[in-house]
Image (cartoon, rainbow, N blue to C red; front, side, top):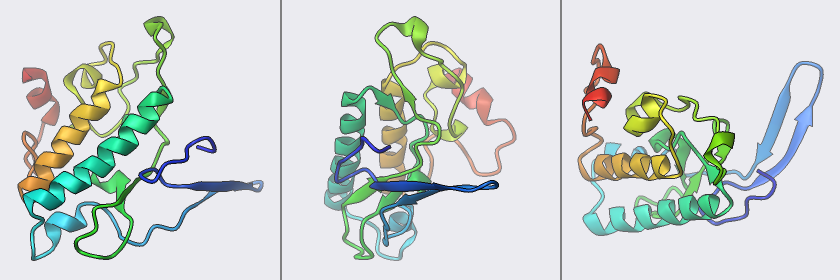
Length: 168
C-alpha cells in the first residue's frame, strides 16, 4: 500500500504494531460508503453515476498498471471523498484480499477471494482469472448505482447465490 499514490485510492500513512495488534493508519475519508448514493432520497443522475464510475475506473486502471488485482471491489470498499451529495470523487479501500498479478499465470494464486455477489464467474469457481475480475465487479457496482442498489443477479436472502453464478 505504501507504493499506491492515486486520487482514487486511499492514502496509506504508516503501520503501528504491538504484541496484540497491527494498526494501519490511512487517509481520513469523510464521505462514507458508496452505497450511500443509492440509499439517499435523491437518486444519482446518470451523469453523476458516470462521473463516479470514471473515478472508480481510474483507480482500478492505476492499480492494474501496477499489476495489482483488488479482488473485492464492492460499494463497501469504495468510499466517497466528501459528504457532498453530488460528490463523484471516490477512494478505493480494503486491499486485504488484493494480489500481484503475474503474466506467467502459473505464479498467480487464483484463490476464491472476495465477496461472492461481486465475483466474476471464473473467480467464483476457482478457474484461472486475471485483472478483468475487477472490471466485472465495477459493472455490478455501476448497475447498483443506476438501479437503486439492486443487484443484477443476487436477491437479498437468496439461499444459494453460487448456483446463480454457475449459470453465468
